[in-house]
Image (cartoon, rainbow, N blue to C red; front, side, top):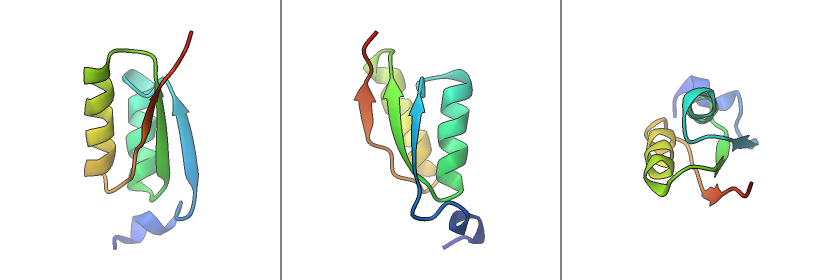
Length: 69
């Protein structure tokens, strides 16, 4: 395990608007620090899948849920 992952170990982060821009960046960075990230996305499922993959690539977990307006 990488040392950086210990910072947010046992922490769950909920990121609204995670499908792009700042939200995606925040979700990926939190995952890289060891947090389990829940992605709330209001856009299409293709973008959501890309974010989930990016979070998993950062060694995080990322269930995603469609948001409602």
